[in-house]
Structures are given as C-alpha cells and as structure tokens.
Amino acid sequence: MIQGYEVKLETFEGPLDLLLHLINQYEIDIYDIPVAQITQQYMDYIHTMQYLELNVASEYLVMASTLLAIKSQMLLPKQELEEDEMDEAYMDDPREELMQRLIEYRKYKEAAEALKEKEAAEQQVYTRSPVVFEFKDVPIENTNTGNVSVFDMINALKKMMQRNQWKEPQDTVIQRADIPIEKRMEEVLQQVINSKDGVLFHALFPVPTKSYIVTTFVAILELMKKRQVYAMQEQHFEELYVYKMEE
Image (tube, rainbow, N blue to C red):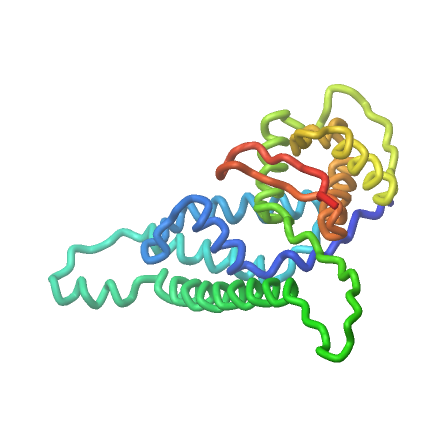
C-alpha cells in the first residue's frame, strides 16, 4: 500500500484565519456575510488541502459543518413578520455568532501584526556600550517574504489543476517516481535562480501526477520557510510568481 504524505504546516493558523482570508480576498462585508458563497469557497480550500494530503485539523472540519448548518438555516423560507418581530428575527440571525467570532479574531490578529511589525523594527536597531569602541558586523535578516499566503498558493494550485483538467483517469499512463523533497527543493531553487524575472507558480508543476504535485508544493513551502524564495501576486486572483530571496 502506498503511504501518503503527512504534512503539518504551522502556517495554517485555523479556520477563522481562512475565513478572514476569503472575506478579504472577495471584499466581503464582515457584517453581512453571504453564507452560500463563503461556504463554497471554504469547502473548495478544504478539498484542495485534502487532495494535497495536508494535515487538515479537525477544527477546519467543525467549521465546515458550522457553515453548512448556517447555510441551511439561511435557506429556510422566511415568513412575513411585523416590524417588531423583524427586529427580533434580526437578533436571531444565524450568522451573528460567527460574525462576532470573526470580528474578535480580526482584532487580535491586527494587534499581533502590529506587535510583529514593532518587533521587526526593533531588530533593526543596534546599540553599543559607551565603554567599548569596537564595531561588529551584525547581519540583518531580509524581511521580504512576499505578499502571498499559503491560502493564496492553495487557491492558485486549485485553479491550475482545474485549468489543466488534471483529473483521473488520465489518458496516458505515467510511471510513479517518488522524488525526495530535498531533491525537488534543489530543482525548484535552481529554476528560480535561473529566472531573473521570477517563475510562474504553475510552471513549477510540469508533471501532472499527485505525488509530484504534493512534493513540489511542499518543496516550495520549505524553501519559503528557509527564506530562499518568496512569492508575489500583483492583485487578487492574478498569477503568482516565485522569486529568489535577495542576499
């Protein structure tokens, strides 16, 4: 039996983080969430993550069930209500609890980002003792990690597979050849180094087999984690480019 890839990524901060990503990406009003749309997009991400055999935590599946339950409630026929009853019905909006959770989560996330920026700024400030007059070279980490999240990369991969119709069964039989992630990292890095203008994300997946796609995707994430490459995207839904991290 072929053993699947088991990958757990720290970048996935939780289902609320994914929902906020979708809300920002599709410019959705957090106070009036279109449940049907957000549920469909959320499930698309979950299915793609499962295809990649990433370790989808149970909390993602719980949120999926919650979204489906809210969607079902929103689809129930609405009776004609009096004005005072309409106010009460508004208070019973099935989206209310989720909305409050998202607003609260966004506050903490923004506060964490602000603290992270302050920490990064402080790391660029160096002092020396007034007694010691020796200067030491202190390496400054390159903080240019791109503007693309893992969720953006999963979405780009999903669209790539849909565009190329990489669905089973395939017309041709391709021999299975497992490639070590370390080797694929070297190949991807070399391809990126050889391109001064960056490499299109989908160009890094020339072989339409599941094992190759998963290995390449994890290799890219590992290179980003090691700060050897970064990904950029001009606008939402546009092509992703992978670049070599500058020295």
